[in-house]
Amino acid sequence: MSRTGTAETNYLNAQHGLKSWLLTLDHKRIGLLYLMGVSFFFLLGGIFALLIRLELLTPQGDLVQPDTYNRLFSMHGIMMVFFFLIPAIPGVLGNFLIPIMIGTRDVAFPRLNLASWYIFMAGGSITLLGVLAGGVDTGWTFYPPYSSLYSATNVLTVGIGVFVNGFSSILTGLNFMVTIHRMRAPGMTWFRLPLFVWGHYATSFINVLGTPVIAITLLLLVLERAFHLGIFDATKGGDPVLFQHLFWFYSHPAVYIMILPSMAVISELIAAFTRKRVFGYHFVAFSSIGIAVLGFLVWGHHMFVSGQSVYAGTAFSLLTMLVAIPSAIKVFNWSFTLYQGSVSFDTPMLYALGFIGLFMIGGLTGVFLGTLGFDIHVHDTYFVVAHFHYVMVGGTIMGYLGGLHYWWPKITGRIYPEFWGRMSAMLVFVGFNLTFFPQFLLGYMGMPRRYHAYPEEWQVLNVLSTAGASVLGLGFLLPLGYLLWSLKYGKLAGKNPWGAKGLEWTTDSPPPTENFRDAPVVSEEAYDYAGAGHGDGGAPAPARAH
Image 1 (tube, one colour):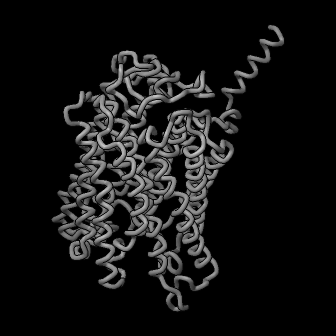
Image 2: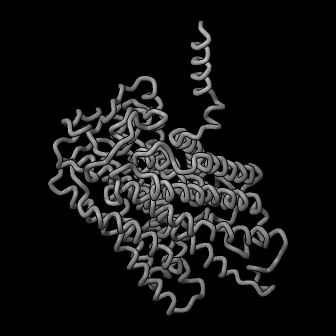
Image 3: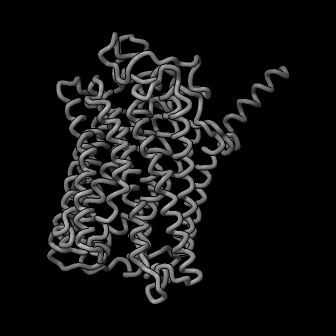
């Protein structure tokens, strides 16, 4: 072999070696690294959820001890919220797609992007050490004074892990904002941006402004526990309710860190599978910004029973109703887009429709909980658990799986089996409703959350919920099998298997390192399905992937 040939072979081997992945500056590879990371933490959180539902199968609480049960629901919440729901869509799909969607080679700060993944994994590893050492029993909210004074579990280790992880969100948000501001292709004006980009821009705004608050709050908690400073200890002049204000000032906007990227995915899916521009594009774009801004003003609705004044509670209740308006704009505009559209019920579209249904239930029950009298009745019951999961899990995961299926041919260059994709979407939707709808009834009847034993008259609904969780788990596991299968046996995807619009569908599948062979110039509006054609360059749309 010639010296030139040897050099080329060594280069190709280096490109595919482990070192090339661990030191990569390619935003697409970093997105795939996030995919592996969040999948691991999702699996871990799912195992904790499985043990919780098995415990609640019988009224006696005879599977695990009470203190073990406390650790299970705490670690389930921490893993799912901080290490899956928040980073999943921005980390995986946002990293992979945003530079391609705006027509640039990479994010603004590639090294910072890689550092964000390392920080995410470092925070997750520290938290995992805390799990292996016994976990925590404080719930995912870490409320003092129990967490700062009384808990005998690994609050310090887990708190530090979540604190470290926060820097990953901040750096990712900063990177996305600068990339979107400064690196758009010629002709890519603000109002030609895909709604996926608008959603991530609003999410980045929350990440950059809100995450430092929770980071400082957890740091104060760690210092309080380690050195007994009295920040949240009432016996030393501190205020435990101050922690709740600080925690929810971030954690309610964090709800939108989870749901806004999912909404951004749904806008792309609705447009692609109705062959129409999203109705009221400008309103949908600005509603993302509206949610990001108003989300910082409603934290007090988590604290109606904390001792805050009735006047403050009334103000937060009214603001809670107000923040529902931009969310409703999205749902109404998606519905108008569906009207008289050429709707195709491919797997991503089934997830999108499932998202709308589950998010509607979660959003409407959120209005219930934003009402003072009703919230006091169902506070700390399974009604709150069901509402939270309908919004966060039903919303975020349906969007995540819908987006993963939609862009999987672009990411891998391969097509997955459509039958199994549709089957998984149906199982997730049915299993989710069977799991969590009975919990609305349990909560209304007064079953408190975080209890491992309950009266026998509630067993039927709990059995239904556990049965639903088994169906839901199967729905989550199916994509793991057929998506991995498609990597080797799936049909080649081509550039644009869906006949969709957008710059990502004009480049190869998977995209080259530089994203585009030639620098793109944008000359049409977003989602211009009414133009000369629906495929690449105005050509007729390709056949759908099946």
